[in-house]
Image 1 (cartoon, rainbow, N blue to C red):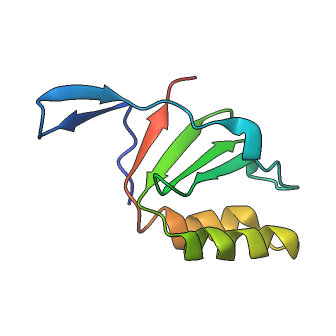
Image 2 (cartoon, helix red, strand yellow):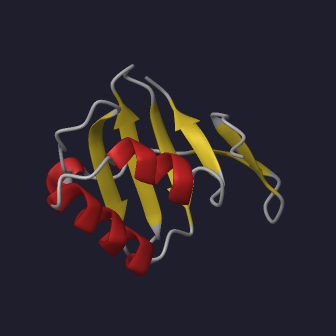
Image 3 (tube, rainbow, N blue to C red):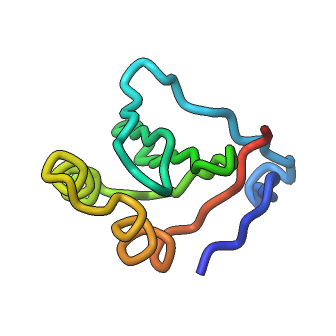
Length: 99
């Protein structure tokens, strides 16, 4: 289960890190009851989602394979929310982004 929090403590540098949204130029706006927007940064392995309640989260260390599986779900009209709940939230650390 994710710990939703805005700030993470960086143990290497003893700094507090504020996570910024990733560029929205590649964002996808699925036809979904749960999600407004989904985005992925392959270099940083960050999946970012904005839900219909306008809350945004980043999930860390998400593989390209998982992202491609998610894209397949979206393209085939299956539930993006179900994919997030079953394949992302239980397995990846996340933070809630500022509104």
